[in-house]
Amino acid sequence: MLYIRMLFIMVVSLYTSRVVLQALGVEDFGVFNVVGGIVTMFTFINSAMVSSTQRYLNFELATGNESKLKSVFNTSVQIHAIIAITIIVLGETIGLWFLLEKLVIPEGRMTAAIWVYQCSILSCAVNIMSAPYNADIIAHEKMSAFAYISVLEVSLKLLIVYLLWLSPYDKLIVYAILTLMIQIIIRSIYSGYCHKHFTESKLVWQFNKPLFKEMSGFAGWSFVGNLASILFNQGLNMMLNIFFGPVINAARGIAVQVQSTVTQFVTGFQTAINPQITKNYAEGNLEQMHSLMFRSARFSFLLLYFISLPVLLETKFLLTIWLKEVPENTIIFTQFILCISLLFTTANPYTTANQATGNVKTYQLMVGGILLTILPISYIVLNLGAPAYSVFIVHLCAEIIAQICRMVLLRKNIKLSIKQYVRNIYLPVLAVIVVSILLPILVHSQMEMGWIRFITVVASCILSVGFSAFFIGLTKNERLFFLNKGLRIIAIRK
Image (cartoon, rainbow, N blue to C red; front, side):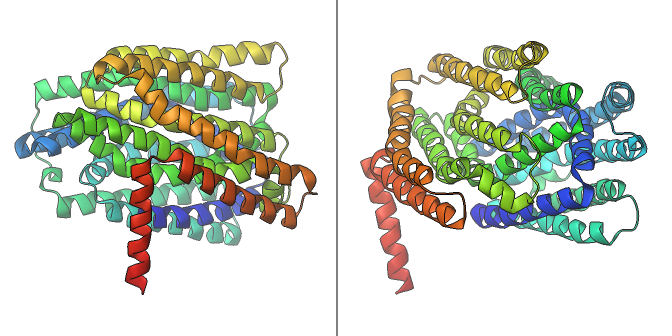
């Protein structure tokens, strides 16, 4: 169900991004991305709490303690309400000052930028209050419901594109208002589904002080990691705006859209497997937990690599076909962001396993501390006159160091051998890259850009990545599993 959702979202997202860019224009599209990014920066407070909620719900579902499960859900709603109010206050003070005084907004577009900003704040508050309901659906592993609602959301976004072209009013303002309306509708559906199917989601306004402190404490240490994530994403967006203006934000916005679309292939898989990693830890099945971690990291990388390789080789052609007019720096931004995503996708099992243990303090301080260095180092590099894409080189280097740090820290927490992790994940993945990349690069280098080369490159990628992933990236048991599944599907169809 998650992959059906992903395919639909991918097609619609690529189409709507192109049309929205054309409808708004490059400058307004950049304004929308950078102004909305101010509000997103404040959501690091909420992101930490989302991780805490997901972990505690998964844990209590595994132990079967229904009373504790109800307390966890109710407490998470109370904490999220406090966070929503806090972000509204910060947004209307510090954030509004930053918008009015620091951002580079084209002349005559400040009124529209303020509309976008206010709608973004309200959307953010709505999303925060719905986070416990989303987490509850995932914890119960009701992926079909999650998929159906997501498909509805992206369908409504498709409707926005149509309304945007029809609107006689300022299109940037209309786009912001319609986006807010969709958020309100979808979040109402999430909460309604939970109220109907999960007893713990029926709120009882009781204050459980010990649990409140425990969940807040867990979230408090996750705060560092999430702060780092927001800063090197939205912080870099602001920095690029200050150094290069809103057009560069449009280029980054498009690159991020490509990244988000491609990584949907992995997100669905990881969304389904993450609750099982936590539940196995809660039940004391460390060996099964390790096995799930290995497969999650390896399969996630292979899935993303399968899609990313042809995109990396044919970035210029794809962006030209998709957008017609490609903003400067978009091609190189897209290629760097995809490479970072490939590396980062193997980190998800580390994060999930660490959250399952509840011992997040050292992990978040170390890994978050490394990622926090991205912003100041990028500032120094840009101040020295480096090109805009240099910030992604800084990000890539920091992610490599953070990956090593994650392995070392989890060695004690879950009794996981670094040697075992390298042997089960990194060696097979590197072998697949070395073997699979030769044929596509050869084809790409020998042909002129166009549809024939694109189709030939995609075919060579499918052949080389599929072959090497199956025979090198999978274990013997995994190959047998997939073969048996394939034979069963063929037998059913006959």
